[in-house]
Every structure is written in structure tokens, then in C-alpha cells.
Amino acid sequence: QVQLVESGGGLVQAGGSLRLSCAASVSTFSSYAMGWFRQAPGKEREFVAGIGWSGSTYFADSVKGRFTASRDNAKNTAYLQMNSLKPEDTAVYYCAAGTLMAKAERMYDYWGQGTQVTVSS
Image 1 (cartoon, one colour):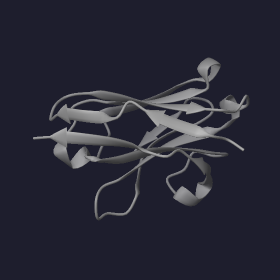
Image 2 (cartoon, helix red, strand yellow):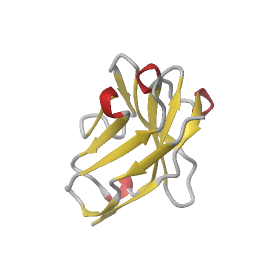
Image 3 (cartoon, one colour):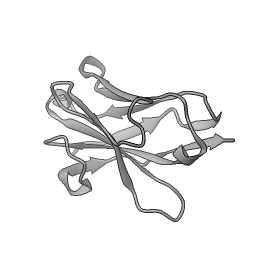
């Protein structure tokens, strides 16, 4: 069983930055692909970014150029750096772990509890 714990959310003004962390309680973290998803009030959860075990990344069009994803396998932690934040980025952000990097939620086996990101205008 893999446990994921997100941190780093908070309130930020538009144009600001936040870095989310996702700490995994598994020694084989390096073999997992990590995904970042978000769910805004009244909306379905959506894919934001993914990072494969090799470090390759993929981003939703809505965040491309503003968000970056990285991982530190020695610390069993994945990161989502969010720059130039917009009010529409306001959501609960979740990290997830799976075998392959994918946009589909069903491809991820383990999920964190989520962290709130609020961007004020």
C-alpha cells in the first residue's frame, strides 16, 4: 500500500507561485509514475501534469508554460511548481501514483488526500 501526502497549498494572489509536494511512503517510489490532478468547486477532477519514472513530463494545455513537475527519488517526493497563478487555478490539488504516466484517473492506483490552492484576483 502506497500512502501519498500532499503539502504546500495555500492562498496566493494572481501572478504568484506555489510549490506543491507529494511525499510517498514507499521504497520503490522511483518505479512509479506520478500524476497531478485538480478539482474546482462544481467541476470534475481534471488532469494537470504527470511525471514518469524517467522524469519525462506532460502537462495539460491550461497549465503548460506555467507549471513544472519534478521528482526527487531519494526523498520519495514529487513536486508541482506553479507559477503565474490565475484565479481559475483555484482547486483542490491531488497527487496520484501509478504504473504509467497518463491523463486518465483510472491509470493511477494511489491517491493523496488533496491540498487546497486558492488564487485571489
